[in-house]
Amino acid sequence: MQIKDILQLSPESQSVVVKGWVRTKRGQANIVFINLNDGSTIKNIQAVVEDGKIGEETLKKISTGACIAVSGILVASSGSGQAVEVLAQTIEIYGTADETFPMQPKKHSLEFLREKAHLRFRTNTFGAIFRIRHALAFAVHKFYNDNGFFYLHTPIITASDAEGAGEMFRVSSFEPNAAPKNEDGSVDFSQDFFGRETSLTVSGQLEGELGAMALSKIYTFGPTFRAENSNTTRHLAEFWMIEPEVAFYELEDNMNLAESFVKYVIQYALDNCKDDLEFLQTRLLEEEKSKPQNERSEQTLLEKLSFVVENSFERLTYTEAIDILLKSKPAQKKQFQYEVGWGIDLQSEHERYLVEKHFKKPVILTNYPKDIKAFYMKQDADGKTVRAMDVLFPGIGEIIGGSQREDNYEKLMTRINEVGIDPENLWWYLDTRKFGSAPHSGFGLGFERLVLFVTGMGNIRDVIPFPRTPKNAEF
Ligand code: ATP
Ligand code: MN
Image 1 (spheres, rainbow, N blue to C red):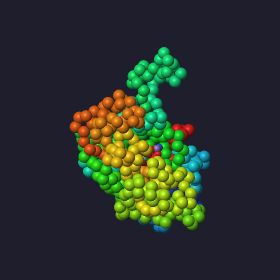
Image 2: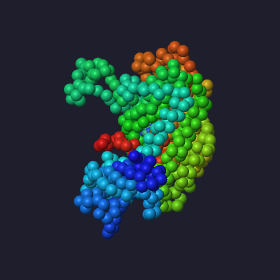
Image 3: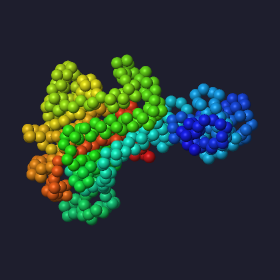
Image 4: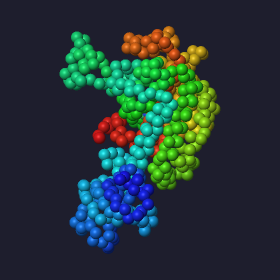
């Protein structure tokens, strides 16, 4: 049985077997307490070894990090902190761990734990994070399934570089030094595995749109890759993205979907991850104590999550946001690092001012200048802006980027030529605008940014099991 289930039982001296990893072992003259965890819950179960019940030799080999199976009877605990405990009758040792086991029961820095990513699962913090990550992933599928969406698996290897030019990881089966060359010295990709240049995808959207033009409501949930050298706390080179794409949705419908989706998955975590969230909340409060008063957050983690679920997101246009930023204190005191003006790509400092200082709630910005957004976004009548929408979150900045898509063939072609993309490479995408084109919209949610927000962690490297970042692919 899993420890999570055993802890729910009423103790009637029934026989149980618990298997897990030793977190701590405390010995007294005639009694030993072993705390076991099997990852099913943040809670440990305590095994009690009374004098002489287990051989000295076996007991000696049990220490923090060892994996054991304890057979015994379940009794009410006389100690505080747990309702039940196991009175050990036999113990089988699966694997010992000596004192070089790095996850000793003391405080470790997150940086240290990143270097031990293969073992950090065995800490309370990372156990909590990855259980919450699982719950959120499950909630994503549940939300879309229950709302009539189909999960579409878009390709990971792609030949289209329309979106990610320059930021893509190349996929090739050539030997790096023995790639066949053309006469002009360039690599002859026609001899490569796919007979052309291919890369890892930066987004499943373009293929997702093809699916939406038949299945009406689809979503993707898969890994995406960006070779951008941005060493921030919010960027990974490999991250997971959820991309719904819906026929007949206009920008407003898209915003409503994004808002109800994010609220649903956060509520799901609140309902299903209480112990883990409370643990992380306590951890955060401890961490905050070392910060100066004015940098501490006004809300606890659970308050912050409930607040997002209970309040509507602020919706305004890019142009309105620029006005607010221009009038803001940091702009007038020249405290922003990047200057504000209509046409700029908003920097994280601007997004965070709007969300954290001005509105104090999540914000959806719409109708961005077309020059800072992708070619496929639907153009507004003014010729200057497009029907884009970004959802901005406190502490994170952009969590969702999306838009209504340009469904008019001529307008799309004009834009493709303007930005200098070769339409030959996108013939299949353009076909959807030739055959039964329809208004449609979609967005991409960066899954790790969501997990970052829900767990209250500060660095995206701590919410994915094995982070991929510049110069880092150890595990
Ligand atoms: P940013 O400006 O923060 O780099 P972006 O404009 O490049 O984001 P999009 O291309 O719109 O982002 O991707 C959709 C979503 O994917 C973003 O809203 C974000 O949540 C997530 N995302 C984008 N890049 C990364 C990354 N390198 N690591 C993790 N998540 C990312
Ligand atoms: Mn980016």
